[in-house]
Image 1 (tube, rainbow, N blue to C red):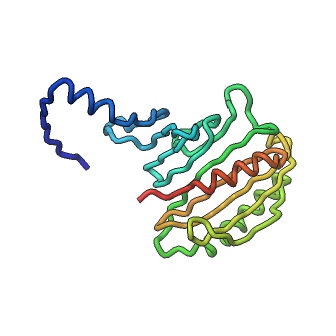
Image 2 (image 1 turned 90 degrees about the vertical axis):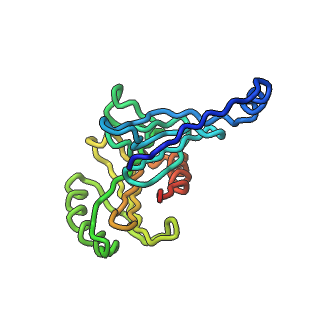
Amino acid sequence: MRLNKTAVILIFPLAVLMTVSGCLKKQPPEENVERNNHKTVATSIVKINEDGWKTLYNYKYKFKIRFPKELKVIGDENTTITNVNYKEKPYLEDGDIRIDVYTYTQNQDTDLISWFNDNAKSESGYVEKLGNKIVEIRKINLLGMEAVQQIIKFDNPAEGSPGMFNQIYFKSDNLIYLIMGNIPFENAEQLKLFKSIINTFELLK
């Protein structure tokens, strides 16, 4: 959608202009801005907050999430948050963390529980094939909405190190969201951090 702008030129005395500009609050810096080649509208922006945490605004998938400044956003869709430099190592180690946000487009009337049960059947076979194990599936409340949490423990050299996937599924409109935390060695501090980050997740209108 193109916005029409009307340019208004205001001429102030120099002293007034300096006073006003001194009162204006600085906007937080931005980083990792991805822009469409044909439009000037950002599809995702990361802003640095005054408390040192960052906020990822992903306009394509309509969500925002906060995380510590030590972590960074990676991936073509800007939906992965991690402290790992994948150019230096291909997998996570103890003390690392990775959080991915996935979306699945469904019909408006798709029931989350039915969808999860149908997909969990095929996923469980894949999980077991890798030598991993689903240890817990339960209903939870997220953002005031019904959600499903699934915890998978893995002990497979292909994963780089033993650990856990903490997966949370929920539905909004025609999108089913999956927020997945990859936590090597089930590190207690990183698990606590994952929960703190999840609690900041919000949907954009």
